[in-house]
Length: 129
Image (cartoon, rainbow, N blue to C red; front, side, top):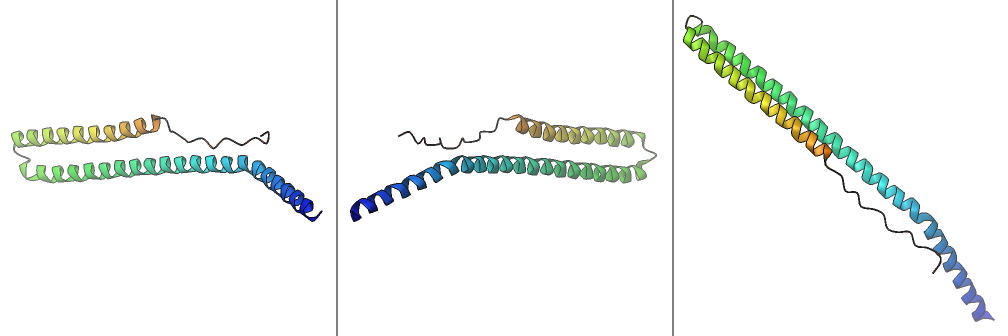
């Protein structure tokens, strides 16, 4: 009698434990997917902030170049050929700055368009077997 009671108790305990685990597995999988989605969103936010920082740095550098160019023009105000060369250099610098900013934006856009691979959760075991 005692052995039958222990075996029955042991089997019922395992069945309840298994049922509890089977019930909680979908919740665990949902939490894992939610965490992965938040991580991907955080990564995207960081990349966008880095792009904004780089664009701001580029604009500040362009302002600095313009200030240097303006100061260089002052002593050469009476030399038309020097003024023309400085203006050509200014335009070339502006073109390079514009191309750098556009490249940065294009790379950011292309990175955002790439598909994200999110691993799927483990299959939920069935209680049929």
